[in-house]
Length: 71
Image (tube, rainbow, N blue to C red; front, side):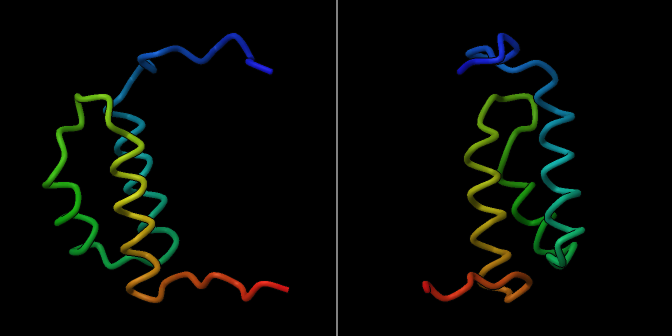
């Protein structure tokens, strides 16, 4: 069920971009790796899903987070 707040173009893309980077660093991603990933994206564009995917992959590759085994 939609909350009524979601739009095709979310507001404040730059703040969302910065929050994604901060979260990745808080989860343990090396700041230099996060900065290198951030340099590939324009924070004014609405491609937040792509940067989140890139940060997630980096977190997994770096071993900062682990995916639990299936039960």
